[in-house]
Image (cartoon, rainbow, N blue to C red; front, side):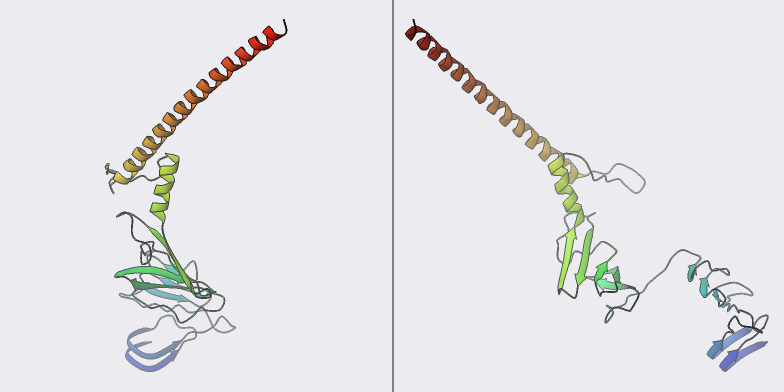
Length: 232
């Protein structure tokens, strides 16, 4: 069956192929029942090039693949979402994924079944100021509570670095060339200075305690001598 322009619809049972130049209407594919075969719909740039395959037998769609392995199989491995908007509300038994412009940056967002909205791409600093150029954030909204939360995750780890003295953040160039990490060096410097100060205090306190012990020993020695003299 070949046509240049079709207006209306096509219902296919067992047909080897249908090539259409322009189709306005609908294409009805057969179900997997007796007397009918599952059908593949191929939108081809060239002959038999699998640009889009609808596998009605397995209820799956393949983009760039003529043998989709799941409900949606994208052969390039990439899914591009253009700018959208916040859904009006959650869907039953599912979640919603979309792209949205947040302060000039397109972020990947998700709404769960309870209506909570979380930004998956970690660059939303609408509430918390960005601490460093490589900082990433956690951002989420809870419509039931009427609250939203924003955390600078890198800053939280930097604070942990200062408290522990252990290096937790490593920065390098995309080709693994060394890159300066002034914040990390500053954290180590602060930790070193704090550790030295604590050591000095401990040494000083130790000296004070030793002096107190010495004075107590002298007093006890004098008391023993006085008691010994009185008993003679």
